[in-house]
Image (tube, rainbow, N blue to C red; front, side):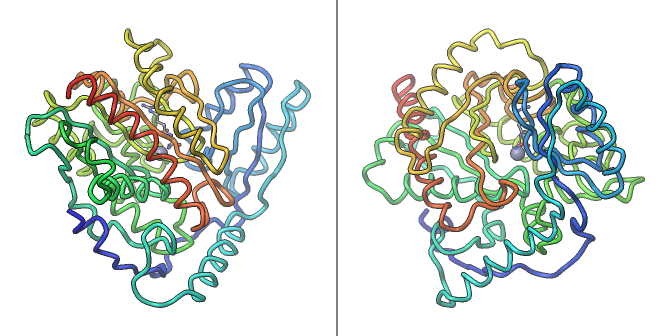
Length: 400
Ligand code: 0X9
Ligand code: ZN
């Protein structure tokens, strides 16, 4: 088992070929709406391909971080300027996104060049190409009993959220290699997919021009735009809100539920194992949230209190262990973040019936949150694992 997880330190630390137009002239705005009407106006832009919401905010008075292409900046700035009369605040936090990405990448290359060539430690020395091999990993780490209660974790469904994958790999490494955690898989199985969107992930690595790619990479019929948002592609309340029918949008729901091989792979696994799976966690970044269903409605599931209590029990040890000062916000997706239908967590709970279903948004880092410096990988993955220990112990205590 160490096998794939850690022995494949194939670590080709450089990025590959250059493609696409990149983010030249794209700006990032920090916008703080003060009224619900202002927030609504901003949310309407969510599915417009010319905008990318790096950080959304549900609560009035909290800042949103929105990237706008050069094509819409004039229009956007006029809209914002009009809204400032009603109290909205905004500033341009980045004048040229590509320039910042290029600088960050040059810094990354400089630091890597000063290290030894060859194999490097997974969590300390580079951002390797994990997905080359990890796509095929759906590993049981477990009790030896195929029907034992199972914890299912996926990571990296959004291509650019790189920190998700090492966090999942770290869970595997601790479960497999650290005897202190053997008890966590004595009576419980763990199924972990560290890079569930490998094509997208590779694309986001292929050039700094593609660094902010989020979706899958399957071409769309009748459109030149590529890819579907896999986290809008699950078949429970699919495309009922907070998702787009435009293939060019970053939150494109796909032509139909489970149109993507990545989401279909999860579906097939759950269909075969639904009786055993007791906990589902999908790992994303960024923003320090533990989210639970629903993402399609602001109504709460009947067992919201249970979901909240277990999430709090996971957040506490993360926060206690954090050397980064991490603090987590916990709540239902729609209520603390935004409405977004077709997510994997809604489907596992709503369609499959997994009671405990969560989306972890890990800490961000670097310019836009998706580029934690290499030195932040270990602190993030270590503190996050503390949450998974708590979750693992809870599942073992319930079913073990
Ligand atoms: O929008 C998403 O898919 C997730 N946030 S992210 O910034 N990583 O893209 C949140 C998903 C929460 N779950 C649902 N809406 N079902
Ligand atoms: Zn995500």
